Length: 220
Image 1 (cartoon, helix red, strand yellow):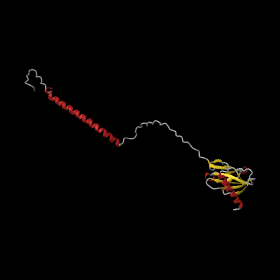
Image 2 (cartoon, rainbow, N blue to C red):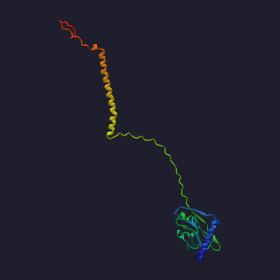
Image 3 (cartoon, rainbow, N blue to C red):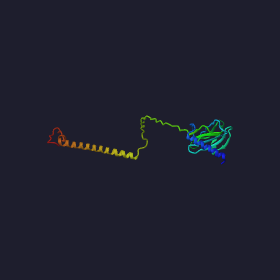
Image 4 (cartoon, rainbow, N blue to C red):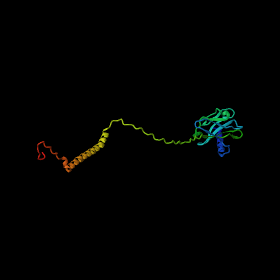
């Protein structure tokens, strides 16, 4: 590494210490969605011929982005992460991050220049956009009355099991009816026999009328 590069990294380390100690102004916070481009502005009043851009990610150490000419938008020295950025707006002191990655790009961004004195530009903090909060609303529906099922007549033929059930139900009824009929018949016959014994004159034979001119001695 040449002496110029060592000098640049020494300045960056010093600038990081100043930022972490809170000597600079409060950073300008920019919330970014993932994979979205973002403009990072850093303007230095009365800067020298070269402006050095760097960042301090939240999950990493100091990273050198690039050194640019303050007069013409020309890149003098590229850093290891420079391919993630674009210099199309560098004439307006804006460095463009092509696609934000919350795990690698969230952190502090700034620039510095040295003429007679070392001067720092504004500090920008990139942080992920908070996901939208969704409020779940629960809608309670009124219970609907149950729908009565329509009565459907069976269309299938009567099975053997159903016929057996019918026989089991009708057979006792037929037996009871037959028993009642037999009891009634026995009762009628018994009553007739009793009436015959008690009233024998009802069943005596009537005497024959004698023929004219003849006498009858008794019953024939």
